[in-house]
Length: 220
Image (cartoon, rainbow, N blue to C red):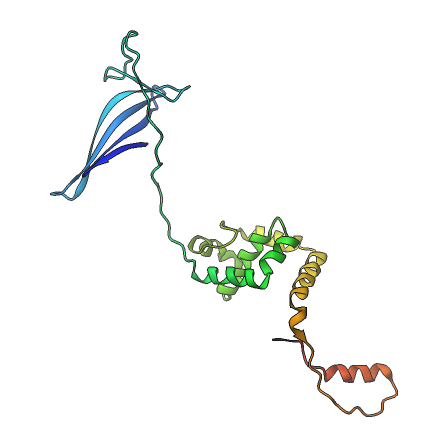
């Protein structure tokens, strides 16, 4: 469909329609107007020509689908306009937008892209789902995907996610954690709690006791 012009409550457009019996595509002039009394749209169509398969141009006809005489080869050129939207959908973007910004600020998104160049968006989308729908199994990802905007933007079948997890190697995981560690090494510290250790001759036992008194790593 090609929109031509709009005047007041009337919209004129050129509509192309394929005749399945003859295989010929015809062009119609369609005028739509708004009926204020019945509060609904009314439209009328008028045949103006056939669409040339090779050039896409509209060749005028006599109104019955037949080409005009050879002496009158009128060609109607129609400029391509915007194609009207044939579908509409609504998606939630609040929570996933927040996770997008967290991923950017912490460098998680960039590090995943470095370690998993082909699947980083899929990994992010699955992570978003597991965070926001922690009590739901992964096979319900499809419904969540249709309602939420996420990095991958498409549904991920349960089998595909299993293949994704199985394909992640230990080396890739270690590389990701090394990159994340470098981003946080400047802001990390290990607090130590001083203790007086009794004299122990066995070095391995002394090391184990010291380890139990060490606090876990903290972030500022």
